[in-house]
Image 1 (spheres, rainbow over the protein chains, first blue to last red):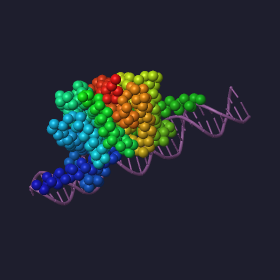
Image 2 (tube, chains in turn brown, purple, green, blue; image 1 turned 90 degrees about the vertical axis):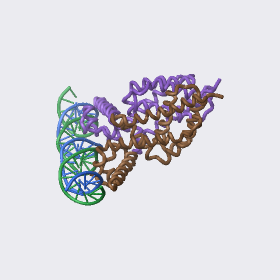
Image 3 (cartoon, each protein chain N blue to C red; image 1 turned 120 degrees about the vertical axis):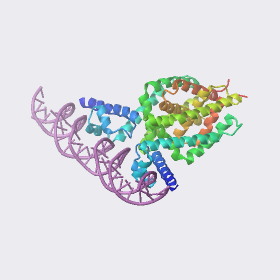
Length: 199
Length: 199
DNA sequence: CTCTAGATACCGACCGGTTGGTATGTTTCT
DNA sequence: AGAAACATACCAACCGGTCGGTATCTAGAG
């Protein structure tokens, strides 16, 4: 049972190194040799565990988007109003952007590569559409409970996703340009005043 | 005066080819030789007109973002209410995404490269902050005229930019996934119900 | 007008270096 | 012994960029 542990250790050391380098320099500009060197392993080990550079990338997509999804679902406490949940999301936005810069930068890389590679696109679109379903559910629920206006849940979810990804990308482009945490909160407030039914 | 014409023809043929290939395959993955071949010129001609591959990219950033800015400013007719202008913008969104796919794909490339290269970042951020100022002005004006709620113009502009870029990127990732023109219009409507002052 | 010198625009072979990927051998676990 | 995990050496292809040389154009002199 020693081999299995070793296997997992090397695998995750490859993934860690790749995530770091892909986020920093981009998928195309990062070489396999570079990843191996940072991971402290050889090229042979790399290609023993992964079929190709692309395979590592796809593994990263699935890993991180899966993590993000479950962490998103985890923030939803029972009985919490949709508008409240949105505001709490905005508040954690600052923390996410601040502490997980590496991982957030990866998303941009996912996005770019997905446009070119069918396999990667599918790996990105699948969790992405689950995100949309998640937001959609929250909006539907909010409407049912009278917390939100009677908007089209699909459109509402898309607007939310737009704002979220837009903030994401802007924060990535110009991290020091604004207090993106504050902007996120303000954005949700402005959105809510349109979404929330007037009492 | 023949030389000047020749010069400009070659230069723009390089820029056209580069725009097409960068949009399709990405900046990193596109070789200079590839650009030359599509432009129908030699590598010597390429490096005669541009100092580097990066220089071509920056020229494209300035060209296209400049075009976008002036075309944006052109849509603003005097005396038009801010909310009306926003809706008309949303309506042209469909046309932009549909017909100019190549150029819109370039924006994503700009964004990605800007994170890595200081020169490119500056070339992107300068027009970007002018966009922000433009939106900010429209919101301020809308508030002054009583068309919009009394929101913070800076925050409002950032929300608009977030939605716009978010829609942009989503449309790029999954062009067939939604009718993005319709989503854009719906997004602005939802936003407006929060921005517009209740009568 | 012609002739010509020099500037301008362009060509394509070539360079050192790097790329993703592989073939073969060696160590470590079972 | 045999399988699993890894290391090393290597490859053809390609990368951005350079360079010596050439064709085309322009301006001024005669």
